Length: 453
Ligand code: HEC
Image (tube, rainbow, N blue to C red; front, side, top):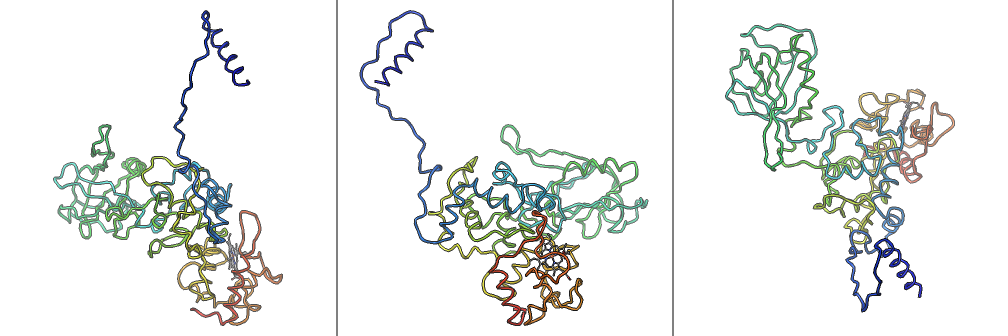
């Protein structure tokens, strides 16, 4: 009854606009077979029906990529003024939008020290040639501007390798005479894909000066006189892509090793995961482990990250963060415990140190560690044998005696320590406690002799 009425009203309204005519109800039936989206993908996936507690928890807490971004990524990063904002090496993943755009995005683009760049984040470098010379363009490894007072070298002199000016390090030697200057225009070239889909090489910057070939021929020195300072600034501002950004002789992209921040379908080859783990496929990753000072991701968090990335279709053009994570079909659901970032047992190397590195290394590491205590770089065990700066009557670690180990007292929140309980937690403007199981492990390790094992 209701349906007919609605239809009649609708028909009357439509006809009202059209003017004349008598409306007749259509006869017969129209078979209606709409093309509905396949509900099995990507909207809903068959839920995990096993018994592993980590998988069940991940499925409840983080059913979709969006939950993962909110509950793991955002938490570990801090929504505002979090630690990550202060860390130039950390990619911006603060919104679901920036998180999704990390899929297939190049890694390590954030400015930082060159040494913090991982070979597998390097991109194909731009190329260099000299307009007046015959040699074929050569890939750029890295460049450096050495600041200092201008010194004029004669044409037949050889400037030192660290002369003030522009230093360009190339992949192959430049086939020009050493020991004398070459006047000319250095052209910087890059490949573009043009509107027709063809690769085209364009010269995107020039620098005109006197050049010398130094060292083994792969090092070019370009003079920068005072009147050229502006040209030099412009050249740097265009953003030359350096194929060997970390200056270690390996051209990561050239060796077919490039990985993106998030590699759809390949969690093991996603830089984001590698930065959390501190290694990629057995290779150590330079730089501090993410998420720096905050609570490291739990097994459940890691499982959500791995399963989400594994389930991303590498051939898709866009990814929907609200799609369900397929825990049932995820290879990591078979053994989520193996994803633990803090190891197992109570040995220094595989349990205690990873805890210190991941929970403390963000502050107690790098070139200027807090309280002069470096817990991050190799040799940490030796440094733990020293006396505390805050309380020089106690050693940081006193083998067999947690109650005399100043580092332990700082962790346990003992009332006798100076300063705050560790780890300091800048996000909550105070301190927090390590999880009980980690405290237990550290205490057990000290009681058992605090061995370097
Ligand atoms: C957010 C930064 C931050 C984090 C994270 C952090 N610390 Fe600290 N740490 C500090 C600062 C700042 C001081 C000096 C001020 C103080 O003690 O409150 C300090 C001091 C210390 C000292 C005293 C050193 C001495 O020689 O007396 C110890 C020990 C220590 N931290 C251990 C740890 C351990 C272990 C962790 C990880 C579980 C940790 N810290 C995490 C910032 C941090």
